[in-house]
Amino acid sequence: MNVMTEPQIKAKAQTATREFAPHHNPAPPAADVIQVKDVEIFYGKFRAVKHINLGIPQNKISAFIGPSGCGKSTLLRAFNRMNDLIDGSHIKGEILLNGQNLYAADVDPVEVRRRVGMVFQKPNPFPKSIYDNVAWGAKINGFKGDMDALVEQSLRGAALWDEVKDKLGQSGLSLSGGQQQRLCIARAIAIKPEIILMDEPCSALDPVATLKIEELMRQLAQEYTIVIVTHNMQQAARASDYTAFLMMDSEDRAGHLVEYGPTSQMFTNPKHEQTEAYITGRFG
Image (tube, rainbow, N blue to C red):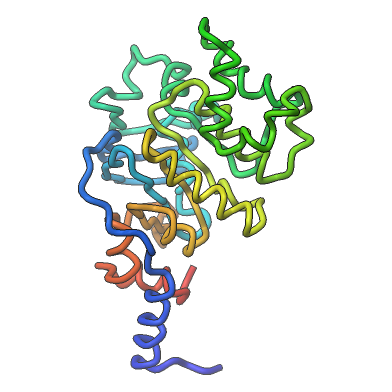
């Protein structure tokens, strides 16, 4: 087995950080729309994440990266209370959306999910027409306006209108994988959320479709705050303004936050050795 020397490790790190360096300009400071305060999330007695403190800036893209099992998706789902649907899950600490504790006793989880939309790992259009996929959420939320205009606006917002405007009556399942994922994004933005969560939204897509979703995220960030989970280091570097690196504690197996900051800093000058080791491929 070949063991790398320290100079070789440093050389590899420099090469990798150059490769992953974001191509867009460093993001300016932004107000935090979500504040996570000493959050711990449990499944029964098992503590999945511990002592998470961070702020999600408004109208920016924040990426959660880290090895499998470190709690990235668990933390993401806590932002719209999707973990509530899992038996035995509970949370300690506070998650504030514009100053409001999402887990306060008087907060309706359904309203939280209207304000915080979600796009899942695999495209999951309903077995309905393209039109009805987009209109569905608005209908159940009592939308009384011009539905045709809303569907068109949402499909345009998801960069899909020109591809489907002549086949709105066809099944959403007839679309390609990348188109289905953009349809799910259109469905999410049709209910006018404040935040859009994306849990590995490109993991089931080919490279061309992945780049389209990344370009779409950049466009959507002009109107929405976006938080993504990704295992793809290049994607985090290309698409996000801020990056949070989580890893699992070796003793209690709970995920914890190692480092969080501007993506440009994280990928070119990380503060922690563990962060550098992960983004350069030396572990994880």
